[in-house]
Length: 298
Ligand SMILES: [Zn+2]
Image (cartoon, rainbow, N blue to C red; front, side):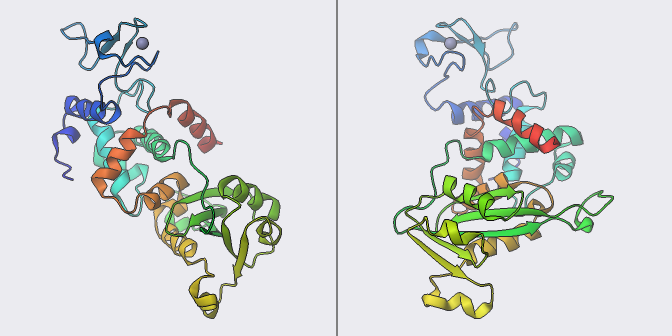
């Protein structure tokens, strides 16, 4: 994909692209759900900005951004699209600071934009990981705590516990956790993973009890010769490999687990397809990002 593409330059082209992604079969009224094209009129002329539609069912007007992460944003749509493309394509993640420079918008705008796009990356209705004969690796690590990686940290930031659940050859879900005690880890595992799965963990005592709830529970200790145990079946390499990537990227210092999972879960598609997926994920996230902003500020 070429970032000189017109939709990254021209707000009208950007709007047309978003309309095509969000409404492949023509506009849908976000107020009442009407999708009867005979009862939706595109408003034209000087009195209206481009892209405004009138629903003749509920008499409300709407645009493609109503009810999306972009609603009421003053940032031009072509910059939104470029940001989605850049965030989706960068292997090591991108900070609000980089985006601020690349898009020529204020740091604060870039910060909000990053947050909203990460919301669009979250799976809307995540299905449980695993199932019969599927293998789930669970692993935990501590990230952050290195002041040198941060743009302007005055004191040593506190390390944060992160746990990740990865289905072998499948998707991952990652969480910040207050601690790695049995109760904390169990709550995340049983609400994310099908109990019919084979669970693979390290030998942390916290996993002992919850492991019994699963079809099978294999454990490894983290020494190298353990990895080959049972012909390579019992390992948490996938999770560990992902953690090592996390620590080298901005995800480790900032708290961008949704983006980190999104990159993993879309690893088999190209940058253009990934950006299109983000553009499709913009819907219905408006209220959610508000909640996320609060959490981020807490
Ligand atoms: Zn309507």
